[in-house]
Length: 213
Image (cartoon, rainbow, N blue to C red):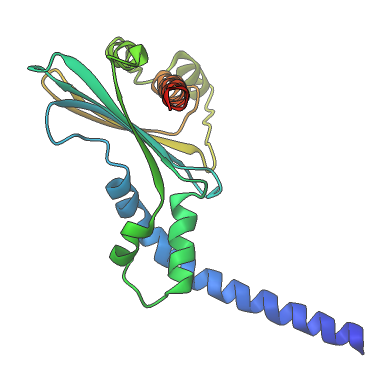
C-alpha cells in the first residue's frame, strides 16, 4: 500500500512539473532572443563596431556570451566590451524569475539579470587590436569544398542544437549580419579564439588590480 502511495505521489509530481514546463517554456522561448539582444548588444552606438554573441540551442546550462569592438577614427584606438552570463545562463535566469512571478512582464526582470561586463582597450590588452584586425583578414566561404563534395554525392548534414554564433560588423560598403551554427567555420573559430584571448586579458588585468591593493 505504501509503495502504491509513493508511486502515485511521484506520478502526480511528474505530471505537475510537466504541465508547468509546457506552460513556461513557450513563454520564455518567445522572449529569450529579445532579452538576449538587450543584455548583450553587439553594436556600439558610435564608431565602427564589430560584434559577436553566442548561445547554445536547447542546452540552457551553457552560458551565453558576447563581445563588441568599437573603433572610433578620431580616437585612433580600439576598445572592447566583454559580457558573459554570471554563473547561470540568461535563459535559466529568465525561467527562474518567471516561475517565481508568472504574472510579471519580462521587462520587469531586466534589471535582475546577472551579467558580468568587462571593458578592455588595446592600450592594456594587445589582443583587442590583434583579434580585431584578424577578423578583417577572414574570407567568408559560401560553400566549403567538403560541403560541395557531399552535395554532389547527395549527402546533407544537419547539426542538432548547435552553439549559435551571431556576428554583426561594419564592413566596406555596408553592414555584415551573419548567423553560423558550425563550430569549425572560420568565423566561429575566430570568435572562440577571440573570446579566450579577451578573457585571458581580463584575468591578467584582475590579477594586477589585486596586486596593487
